[in-house]
Image (cartoon, rainbow, N blue to C red; front, side, top):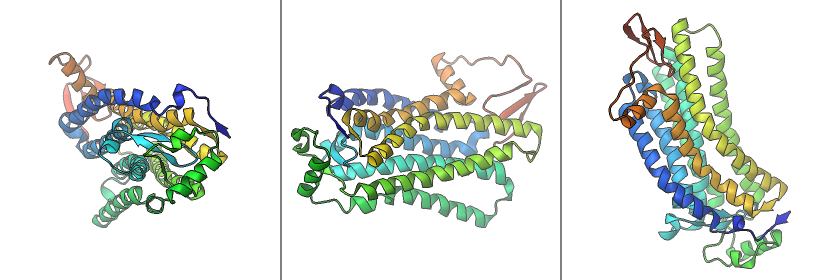
Length: 341
C-alpha cells in the first residue's frame, strides 16, 4: 500500500522543524544528568556509577544524533532517503549516517543489556564470581558491543547501483513525488529489504532476549528467599524497581517505532507521515531516560532539589526510615550503609 496525502507531515522539513529545536533543550538536560551521575553519585552507589553513565551517554548520543546530527527522512519500506543535520553539512555520506542510526539503536540496547548483566552479577552471583568468570563477563560484554557495530555492515558495504535503486523505489512506491527521488542526497540503502529486515529483527531479538533473560533471573532471585536478610532484600528490591522504571520508561518510546519499522517492511506499507513520526520519535527517549533517572533515585533527586533551592538541603523527617533508592537504612539515629553490590 502506498499512501501520499501531500500534507506537511510528509514534508522533509517536518522533522527538522521540531527536532532541531528539541536539541536545544536536550543538550543542557543531558549535560546536567551526566554531571549529576559523575559528581553526585554517593559512594554506596559506586558499583553502578560507570554503567549508569555509559547508559546515559549512549541514550544521549542517540537523541542528539536524530535531533541534530542526522535527522532522518527515509522512505520505508524502501530503505531509501536522505538525512538532514550536521553530519550532512560536514559531508558524511547518507549510507554511513543510516549505518550510524541503526548501530546507535543497537548500542543503546546493548548499554541496557550490560547494565542488567551488571545487576545480575552483583545481586544474584554476588561474591561467588571467580576471576575466570570476570574475564568471561568482559569478553561477553565486549562481544555484544562489537555485535552492535558490525551487525548491519553486510548491507552497508553492498549498496545497489543508485540508478537501479531509484528505479526500484519508483516501482514499489509509485505515489512518491519525483522531486524526492531527485534530491541530490537521496540514497538507496538496499533493494533486498528481506535481508535488511532480517538483520534488524535478528539484532533486536538478540539484544532484547538477553535483557529479558537477566531481568527475569533478577526478579526470580528477588522473589525467592535467597537474600541474606529482609533488610538486604528490601534494599535490593527498591533499588531494582527504581532502575527498572528508569530503563523501561524510555524503552517504551523505542519499542513502538521498531514495531512500526518491522510492520512497514513485512506488510510493504508506505505512509511517509508515519515514517516521519516513528523514525524520529526515538529522539526523545534519552531525554525521558535522563529525567526519570534524576527523579526516581533519591541521591540524584536531592542533588537537583539542592541546586534549585540554592543550597537548601531537605531535613530528614524520620530517622527510622528506608530511602526509596534502596541503598541505605537509618535505624535509631545510627547510619548503617549497605552496599548495593
